[in-house]
Image 1: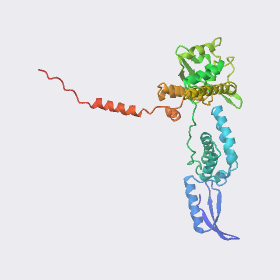
Image 2 (image 1 turned 30 degrees about the horizontal axis):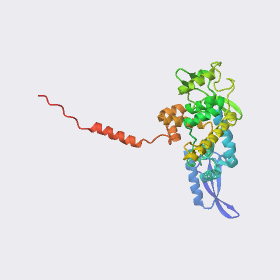
Image 3 (image 1 turned 135 degrees about the horizontal axis):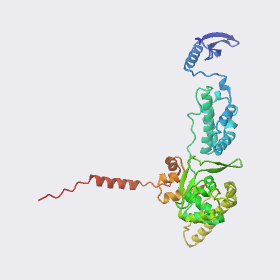
Image 4 (image 1 turned 120 degrees about the vertical axis):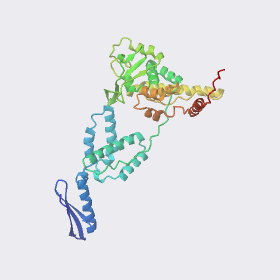
Length: 390
């Protein structure tokens, strides 16, 4: 690589300066348009340093668009679970490409990315979806950095607003039972989800062989999900198998569902072989049952109001997934610690459990202070002198 040169040239607007240099492949390059020799000399020095460090970026390489780079990025997600990949592809098409598809990566600046995030927030896009969208753009541009199309990633220091957990509809024991009764022959589904914390897809995939009725345990080894209208069987969400206990009162109900079925038959299925889809079950059974419970609670509160202050709580608007939250709430109120709840729910870490359900764990600060006080008193109490021997 030669040292390069700085040369003047004449235009209709007067004399300007250009830089001639050779790139890492020894091809002749030039940059024009400098108004002073000093600016051109500084630019040449900068180019020489970048070439020496292997940091030089071909200006033509950075002209590729986000849409072009999105194709190999999406192809690189085939190792992910079908549900995860479907969510990423949907977010890419709905939230990323409409804005960035034709934008050359070399023209993207952090301020542009921040403005895009702000616009999404103003449009009411939730933090979870926005995190995913920004993550996709960051990964696409990371490819450009790896391929030396960009010197750095414009997304690196961009953040989205913190997630705010929306109020959850935790059910009481009485409300779980009322909802189960309203679901008729599917009452066991409600009770099972509310007292084990399984995800719908984990429950729907359970076979007779997954249950240990003597130990009252169920093995979670797989899950089902709906992807573009098709049922896909895969591993649980965190890819980890786990063993989850179920209460004794459910044993008879579960055993009844297994009567006449083989080890490989599905438990929560009308015929033992067809997966129960939440997309069908929720509007057909669950939503109607929730509505009836709400009306019953409202009627009971009106009766109580005529005699004084109503004590019956209102019945919240919930989804089947909220039964998982209810399971966490009931377990914590029964005294379960964070590690037990983490294992039951299949969270990746106890930190995730605390982040999700921090409002449910009691502070116990006074109890901690009292225990420390008692421990110190016991440890530092003056020794009782021994009886002197005669």
